[in-house]
Length: 85
Image 1 (cartoon, rainbow, N blue to C red):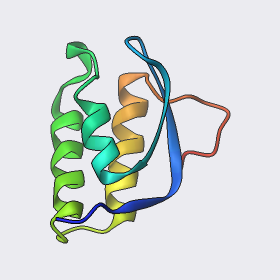
Image 2: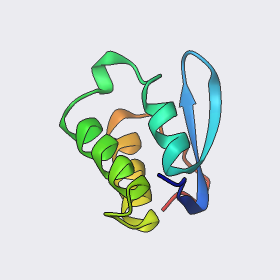
Image 3: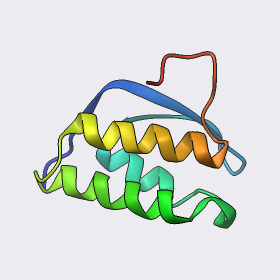
């Protein structure tokens, strides 16, 4: 299992740690463990799987990043005004 870097980091605002930049599938999985319970729905689970699949070579970094951005936006954690898509 190798880490899969994203083309551009994604910035989130988490209540527990403040702003956090996520630059790879591994960092995304670590970060998602800090998401509030209210944000751990279907989108969270699909993204967690997508990032894990990227680490295993089943998905691309782009697919994992796209899923992560969508889940973060759905959860209201994505910092806007920065390039995240």
